[in-house]
Length: 405
Picture 1: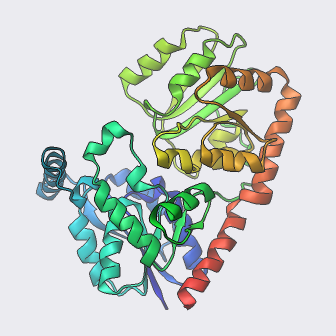
Picture 2 (picture 1 turned 30 degrees about the vertical axis):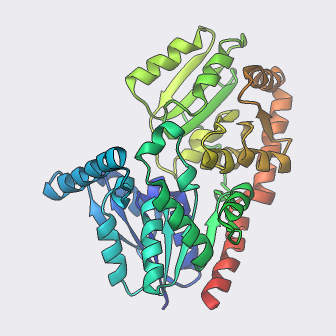
Picture 3 (picture 1 turned 180 degrees about the vertical axis):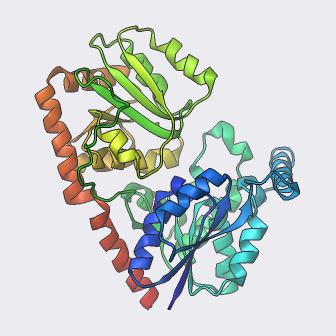
């Protein structure tokens, strides 16, 4: 049986592209092994629930233990950041923990193919290609263009650019998240266009039942937004400004990790007592669809900077469609790519003009029957164009061609 090693640096429950890829490879008859980093025992237990026992999860670094090795890895990264900022010397250690360990362990594996996800694995994949291994890459973000200018001083831009160029030109194949992203990277590096695999999900049966208890009131329109972190630079400030000018009562459900200070900042910015805002903790990927499906409108508030954020299509917009929500999306190139395909279910606003967001929300909540039609259009488009059942067939054909050759 042919062995495929998937290399990553985060937990499976925070990386749905790895999960879907691993399950597809297993379905195709490959022996699948995942080599990643462990940060938290609780998250690791969630990982184990997402894949069957036939898929092996191995760790190249374990930061869940408070020991000397964990301290060593953290010190090395901190020193790497200082060296980059002070001396402008780039190293892979800035990007996370255990680069050397991932590389050495990957080199010892008897793999027929490697598929590399996220920054550290992309740099490791470059080394594996130089060794003569068969390596493919998933560039789910444009890593060298993934931070605002103020944060790029702590980013090894040159190393990331070299790895991206190698992946696009010499990798067995490359995948990414949108056609606009694929076109931009291909043009920038003078390389072949990577294959597009949308961040999609499977169709859900009976997703609305049982009703999730986090939404108490079904008479007031409900808006929802989620991410791993509720923080600045994600469009939430604009949302608060818009809500302050909307008089009709709304409930807003935000899900993710949030600091006390930022929560207070959002509430202070709202300047309205009309709306109810709820903050929810993260849930497992298996629970999330039911949590989303009880709401009316899914908010995709991405900003146009940095370049990667403008070009990608994030998980959230796909999960809103999966849950059958009306989608209100900022005008980024990636989200416009989907909106052009489904104008009935995705309403786009200009993030530089808060009035456009206010108008869309008001139009949607003014007529509940119209809102229901928008939600139905979103779900229908997901089933007929976006669902993972369709996306995985495209990806399966790519895998078969690449591995056959």
